[in-house]
Length: 207
Image (cartoon, rainbow, N blue to C red):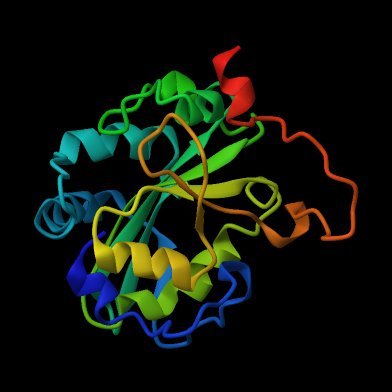
């Protein structure tokens, strides 16, 4: 996540990602195969530490075309966000720092008929008003297959961290370096509810 995206984000105050308003100006939709070359170039230019080729994107796109969403305004491509929809093994591997986030193993991703255990924000890049479409992204992630899964991310800049804070992400203890989580509203335990041991706690990660 890098400055050109975050500098123009309109999320000045902390807001809940799942409650962000939809934009009628920015169109968010699954990427087309013909977009992949431009998206690879954009990610390499705008996202710190990312070096991904068009064939790399093609591999994950072929596995799940719905994992890459584009931001467009007046038919102009402004950016994209790519997700890793993780299965149970992938979720554990993320927490335990046991997966290659640059070139993740396809076996850690949820197939179309497999429950999605966690959603990792793999990369996000954009220009201009692209981030005004984040509410549209939250709508996409509220479909039945994806709604139960919390979101995870690793901000790679101060601006990326500010954006995470602004839309409700919080750092969590894990073996993965600076892993942040956004817990979906329907997964949150009420403040007055009895404390329960989470399924994937940091303490359990050693066992």
